[in-house]
Image 1 (tube, rainbow, N blue to C red):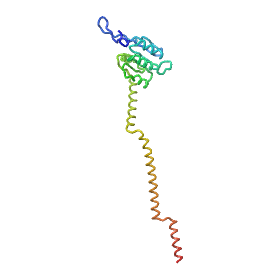
Image 2 (cartoon, rainbow, N blue to C red):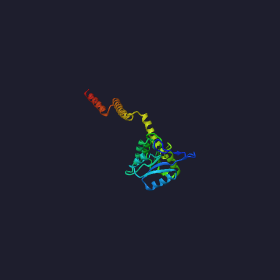
Image 3 (cartoon, one colour):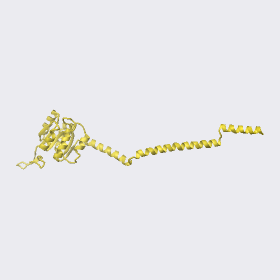
Image 4 (cartoon, rainbow, N blue to C red):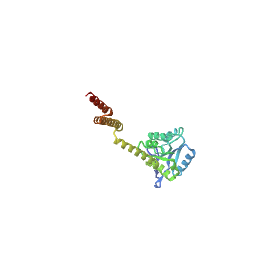
Length: 236
């Protein structure tokens, strides 16, 4: 039985009336041949039907929009450039087939990739590190969670996204307490205050020197006064 989006239902009901789990139609994109074969065997051993397995990005959009699988398991980096072809193809396919469930695999945590995958805020997406594949139970549960409308995010990805959000929040809070230009505005004030203090100090010093000189004449002044007195005495 096909759903409105062209994907098979997760469950079917045979003639005996007992509900059984149908095999989930899956498109797989992985460029490493050994890992690709291993994933095919793993998925098919757990009730997934791999309808097509690819090793490059350009063919992925065609496969996803043609098969409209129950779930797609996609490596972020695929040929020809090994950058983000897998992610780009998945995002483009989801634009053409809204709600297409996609689980992205990545060797490392790429925060930008994770944010772009979650940007449309729709469910049915996942982002896992490839190391999780070796935990078969965890990996299979994640692949099943995505077509069920859930979001399967690697704990390490979540931790880094939350950490980045908290850092941005702290920076925004600090900037919020300081109006724009406040720091640069304080600099001229500090310079003006410093210059004013120096000028005040110089003025006070000059005033003290003037007062001291008036009370205590210099040697030249005393000598001049003594010479004038001697001259007057001789004249008398």
